[in-house]
Image (cartoon, rainbow, N blue to C red; front, side):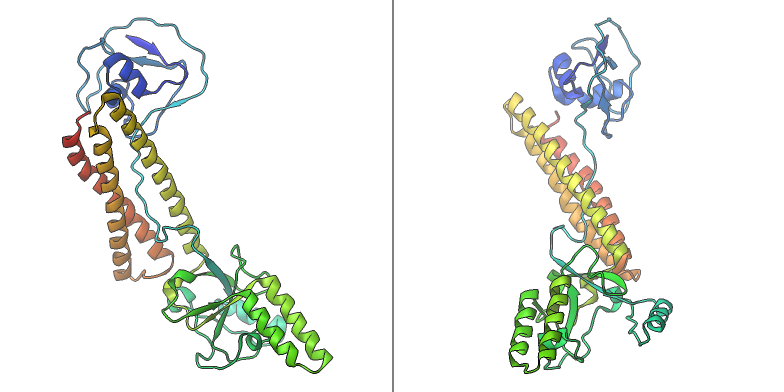
Length: 349
């Protein structure tokens, strides 16, 4: 017969109404030439074909032509109802926590642009080799120079400067932005906050006798405040550094990852409802096995992707992020289907 979708309907609810079990919605989807593995909206007023109540449903993967049609009153198109489906989104970024703290260091990496900038400024400028490959090294790791002296521009020092303005770094500094993940610094590296730099400048100002010297220090204080400058004592390893392309790829993967987490919650919610209706723990247990298998395999796939990228020469930079993402997706989908077989033996509904 024919059925016209009403507000609030989903394939789960329709299957439950006509077949007594909402878990039959994939067969109902195939009967209506829908892919049960894709998130497809139902529109109010949409016509669906339904088998004889209590009659046989099509076997998996075999859509069936409409059999018997019985007219029902159509409804005006209103808002869509989403079909509960399993979206295979198992991607893990190389940074699980999108809020992990980073600081930004802007440096000149292009020799041509650096030469042009030096010509316009009338002074030489340093060119940094690819920071994603070589990291950042202080001018003198053993220098006794204090934080305040470094902020005043004295060199060499044992510090690497960066800005806590995490969007693009200090706008007054020439060069491309590179994000430093403070959670990936080498053991023994230490981060000094803006307040600590200012305190050391105040210490130096208290020892300064001349008015011009105090004015100069105050000017440096304002720059430190404006840049929200932080200092890293020690070398910054390349694994802690990302350029704009790598950060963009990471944020994209993190967005997909959040969607995956949300879809997992939706699917577990549907399974929980089914467990409540049937008074059985089997549906929620089966779905938990599927989701746990997918995410665990995504993690393993991400690690394998990182290792594969390293073999191919992508140990850092956007290449490493992409290989990690591809590995996570492939591993997650493969793991979900592998554990789906186990779940089917727990609950066939």
